[in-house]
Every structure is written in C-alpha cells, then in structure tokens.
Length: 247
Figure 1 (cartoon, one colour):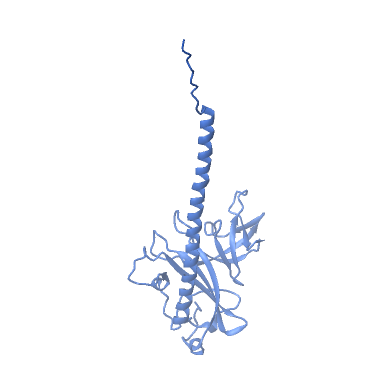
Figure 2 (tube, one colour):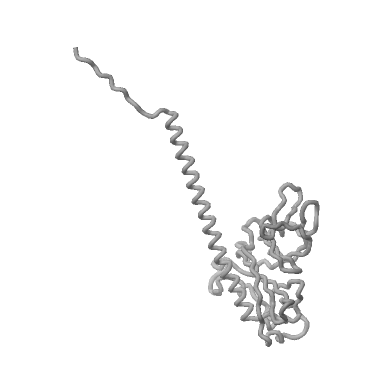
C-alpha cells in the first residue's frame, strides 16, 4: 500500500496582512507629508526671492523719480511715498511687478508700497520702508499703507480698526520704523494681539502702519517688509515748491 504524503499549504494570516497594510499606509502618509512640506517651502523660497527683486525695483523707482520735498520729511514719523520730485503722483502701474506695462494685472502678481522719513543722522538721506505685497485678485486698486493705533487691553493690544491686523501680519511702527509681526492671542474673546520682533515679544501701544487685507477671503497681502537708506542728490532736495507732503 502506497503512503500518501500530506502537503501543508502555508500563507499570511489576516493579522499579518493588516499589519503590512498599516505599515505601508503610515509610510505613504509620511511621504505625502514630505511632498506637501517641500511644495510649501519651495513656494516660500520663490516668494522670498521675488520679494527682494520687488524691493530693488521700488528702490530703483525712488532713485529714478526722486521724492517730493524731502526737506519737509520728519525724522520721527513716516509718510507714504506717493509723489516724485516734481509732484507727479506715483501710479499703480509704477508699483506693479514685473515692471512691464504691456502685461495685465493678472500677470503682474506683486506690487510695492513705501513709507519715507528723513534720516536724523544724515540730512541728505531718506529712510525708505518698502512693503512688498501680493496683487489682489478681486480688485484693481492697490491697497495703500494705513496708519492704525494699538492700545493696551487686558493681556494684549487691541487695534482701533478691527480687521486690519491679523495673525502673522506685518506692521511698521510709525515713530521709529520698527518691523513687527502680529500674533493673535487665541484664548481671548476680542481681537487681541502681541507683537513679535524676532524672538522677542512686545506689547507697546502706539501707531503702526499696515497694508489693509483684501475684501473677503484671500491670502495675506503683505509678503515682506524691507528697509533701506537712499542718498539723494542736492538738486533733488530743491525740486518742488511750497508746502507739501514728503510722500
């Protein structure tokens, strides 16, 4: 009588399959997260590079067109840069980037606004603060810098114009040009903020310049803020006549 050999069929149990699927799923989540983070930092690096280019464009415009009556600028407050040395208003087209007038607003995705004040250490210099902003998608007018007041309220600062300060927004202090970033106090009922200067936190009331946010929903308008000193030629100081804003 011939013996019959029994063949044992082996395989993975349901538990082993579930563990393998879970391991693969976790790995794919980490890989997907790395791609998302990479895209975020790539976009951030691109905008920071473009921000520097837009700031250089603003400096070039200020040097080319000059500033109207720099001798009337104050050293302890800012004025919007709105007029060239002859009093001509700096147009939105001058502020858009890239500076190619044949392109439409949709193709020119960035623009700049600037504040200026005199340099107390040098009568022939002007301190220029440049807001680099994203062009609004739902409007053609470019938001101007707005002067708001922050006052002490409980544990933080409260703006006199609600909605103009938002979490992560950039502000420029009027009296000395200090650049701050607003951080919302989430545990408070009102719109209360503290100001971050680097890693340091400040709660200093006073007047601050901001770029108003777009109407409705949209990205933060201000990409970056740059500051520089411009040395003006003597004839530029004498351009214009009568009292007028330094902007």
